[in-house]
Amino acid sequence: KLGAKFKTWKRRYFILKGNSLSYYQQKDGDLIGTIYLTPQCTITMSLEKSNCIELKTSDRTWYFIPPDEMELNAWQGAIQ
Image (tube, rainbow, N blue to C red):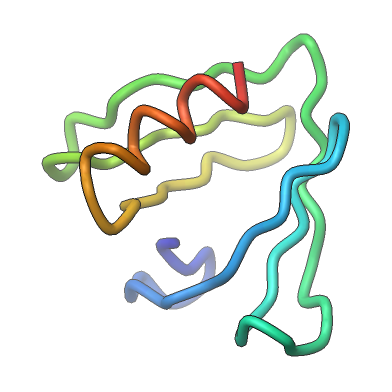
């Protein structure tokens, strides 16, 4: 994901449960944060970078680059 404060790309691990997307620094690490997916959230392909997903929530725009196209399609389907 792209950092909010410092615009650098960071590897994060995500778990989608219901309407929340929790993220971790390591696979078995501690929870860093949660993104709540509401009906107002939108997901599109970003124009910023290739294979980049743009997720807009009420308070922030998130950017994600999955490792391959199969994961990219899975992400889009799961979040929508």
